[in-house]
Image (cartoon, rainbow, N blue to C red; front, side, top):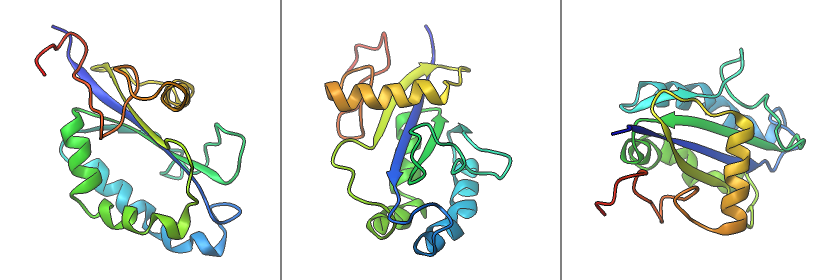
Length: 154
């Protein structure tokens, strides 16, 4: 039986003109700590990062105000624990200070074969798919988790 990991992409449209805008300072100052926490968390596999250590330099939307976070985890539950049961929760609690309301889904989860790392282009396409089609087994969110492919035990 094939084993799967979970990939996730989330994006945010900053209230500042870019990551170096003074309004983004408090968020930017936490990035290294929160990213290091992710890397130490059980179930973490990989995250997109530049030589600077984070993903704020990537611009797949050709919009300096949209930043991405893209990672791979061993399971949905382990990712969920990091997102909702760690210091990461405090960052999410104050999201509205740094990011505009998006008006459509801003994150997506999907299964990948264990050992595979998707491209940022694939991740963007998964989010677009979710935004256009809603939750399916190909692209979903924490409120609508689908079982891994080939797992019919719900």
